[in-house]
Image (cartoon, rainbow over all chains, first blue to last red; front, top):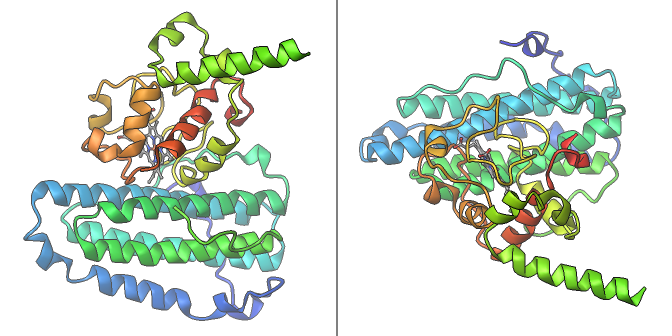
Length: 200
Length: 143
């Protein structure tokens, strides 16, 4: 565990989520439903693994592990943002909530990788972030938004590759979550939250 | 004035044709960093949003950094842990190999940890490659 992970900021109480503008949707228990759903999707994989060839299973393991690596980075990035002292309380609460989602993604993906008989990748000891460029709340939000935008593409690029469709389905539910993060961060930046009809 | 414009169109045409070829010779001539800066790369840079989940030009992340990728042997960026598959692919990155890789990374290099389906639109790939080609040390995105 790197030092970055040792100090976790306290979880927000839902009553303090007062980010300006239309934010009410992330007050709901949506993230709980999501992870529960993802886990349900990921359960019952063992039965199917038996039919998948080793090579195909290896590919699924590799896809999930690349996703876990990116999720670990997201957790570290939100930690950096949260500890930067640059975020106002409402934004900080959102950051911590989103970080929590990424941790839940890691849990679900780790279970999936284990069910395929492999181990999940560990977080890096150190992440290189462009800290010197993060000087304001806007900088931090812009940085987080670019990571979430990238994550949407990463999952969109992974979904067609899974051998097991259940994994594609679970990855799609994570993609949906990250797309919501991106939209909320854009909104907080004063940008059009949903700047198009299609994203790849 | 006119002369200069004609000249730049001429250079641009030459470059466009040139870009369709394989880049090893340019690399050998040491011309690459200079000529690449003259190609408009805004589109390529905006497509790069697709890569930002795993890559940044200037530092290693889930994927390796891209500064200096052009002309480099695949899997040779220091400080990044590549898959065996990419290292042993013995590919050298030029327009042609990048185009093949970005179209379907896992098909061209089975076993790569870049588990990304790829970009089917050849135009988008070409613009992305234009941008990647500018990422030489000294580029502001590499800082």
